[in-house]
Image (cartoon, rainbow over all chains, first blue to last red; front, side, top):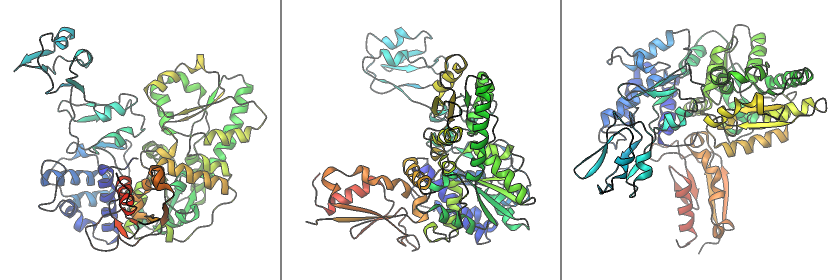
Length: 473
Length: 87
């Protein structure tokens, strides 16, 4: 995700939290983090140092894996949440939480009359408003928020460009209208609509939409007798400036008993999806879409029922990898390391995978442990993995893999849906009638998994690095 | 006037996590007059993060000067000064 101050604060909090855990002082010192990051007299981001500290406190609560709106007593210290996090045995289904204290409760109505209003005689804003929402006082126009319906006619008609459109970034970014205001103006997520694309997380300039992290649950697993195994998504190859074998080696040094590449599961996805495609085309099905992006799969379920019969039944690389890992380690805690929110939800739903760490979380854990990836030991890369499987995380990667496998059995007319937005979802619903391609790859994020909401590296840089890895393997 | 300026971008894990990853795109932001006079390289951890100071990652060396909380604009400005370019 593009780097900005909100993202950096999130990463600093993660690093501090992991550091305290490593030093065995998490419970003792976690309540000090907000004070250390915003000492008396320090410049503040919000109205005052106390608001800043409250904001950091609630962000930490989300990192501990709690839903902010479940707070009963505001005096409950973070140390108490640390205790509760170590006691819990289950993660929650819905992966998001809105941090009210951080949400700035953006404008309720998107149109605002600025001081540029000259209170002209013509008053076309007022004349064109069908809802009679514009009144004049003190020589300037004012919009009555109880009447305005956000049609924008006032803005279009103002000759002075005095009326501006102010977006609500999270609502604007959501492709399915799943985030909206509550009575008090703060946002809430409607999980009957949410497709876990993670755009609200990335778009909120206050960083108010957060994932409930599993980092504490991973720490708990490290302290237990059980083996802990990392299953690492192929997108990792572009996340740090080091060879893949070394990146995986660094992750292992965090305390994992084994590190398995999810590209291994991608081999099975390619194999089965190619077989399924040949079979379905022989049966006369019009087209087939890929199934490895869980955000797309959720979008189909909740918003594009027309497409459901055309989605491949093949499991995702993560699901196959978790099957392999479970067979090898029946009692271990299986931790998926991946690029996005949708994969966190997929981890929750998967019968074999237990927990999920995002790339940003793994990055923070490495920093907290003082592990520099470029100086880490390497692990033996599995050379049986097909090179195309390592290309999955970049748009067109899955298509290339399946195409190679299908060969000349069936002629593939390919189509890439590179990023899901409102218009694309609408268009896809007509595919059963209109689509002329027979194989469609769908990635909810533009560019593919390298542009997931939890990545560290710039997607362009990451895609370049992954292309090199594919070439070399 | 210096002929050439060396730019070393720290690719240590801390710098990378705190925004250094984006600096890998620096070369796309160099002006035509800079391109032949700048040598950009990634560097293993410059060891700036391990000292107690208020300077924050990501770190970049432009010639002999250390830039903290580096971003593309800061680096390009420093290159311009090092090369005595106007504007």
